[in-house]
Length: 367
Ligand code: SAH
Image (cartoon, rainbow, N blue to C red; front, side, top):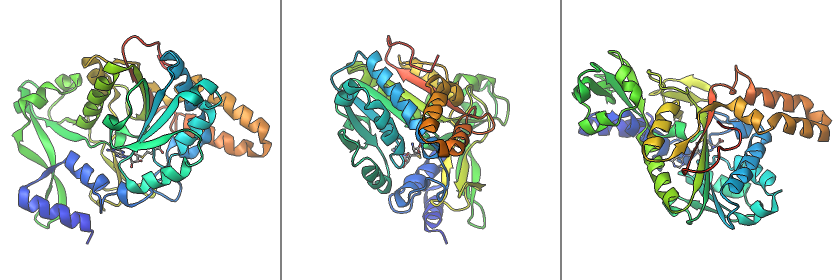
């Protein structure tokens, strides 16, 4: 039997059902049995593939975005460039290659990677070994040297643990919402259960604005870790200005429904099928993210489709330049561009949004 499943079932027998967030955290990050700490999940041999793994062009145009952000911050002598969840370090490597063409930026940049998995940290170290700028690792933002900051996270928010709440009566305040939990059935198999107790008043008051339109049985996902991250960002930006770019999959406006999904070798599988051995993610609610950021005094852009953002950063021109340099690669580059940009691939489902200190210009490629 799957050892993480055994551990979970024992815990549920002893202490009762766990939240979906606790389930996700254990499955993804348990230090000895969790998904990320025990493998390199990316690439065509892995379970899922991400934009920087598809094409070097993705990281390269983001490198230009970083240079422009550094200029928007007033060309500070030192800028902290932070990546959240850097995977294999490929995006950072591509970004730096392009961004270092600007000498001022190359001198100013100091990279910090925030990575929960020791296995992936080792891969990142290998990828970025010869990148020519200082690179270090931190557990979270509090471990990043102070100063003006640019933060980037691609497919980071989608693996933060979500909680799932079910509406029974939207007019009843906290009493009208019950949390969906992970429990066990008579055969000792994992299953979803509904908490008999309603959610707390504090939680009810912090629900996304769309909660007021919920109908009975609607399921709402909330992301307390994203809210916590925004709090840390806000505190950091009180001392020195900064800008954050998140790219992830999800709708522009809050939608109801269960979006927790497990992937194994690029195929969707049941979320309880093999805990710790499948990737678990949930789509990002960009409206709720922006509401939370604004409520604590940060500015945000709209969430724009990935294809609009990358096009404004000049990705098509980059493809033309690469093709000119390597005519043999034309077909491959066209295929890569299509995967990043097409409506039926990542172009529309994925969105980019920036969150920043008040008073900075609108970031390149966004609105
Ligand atoms: N950004 C990369 C990888 C995305 S996968 C890419 O686009 O290819 C998610 C990454 O976030 C992995 O590196 C994973 O180990 C890391 N991660 C997941 N939860 C984390 C957490 N709570 N803190 C820091 N890193 C985390």
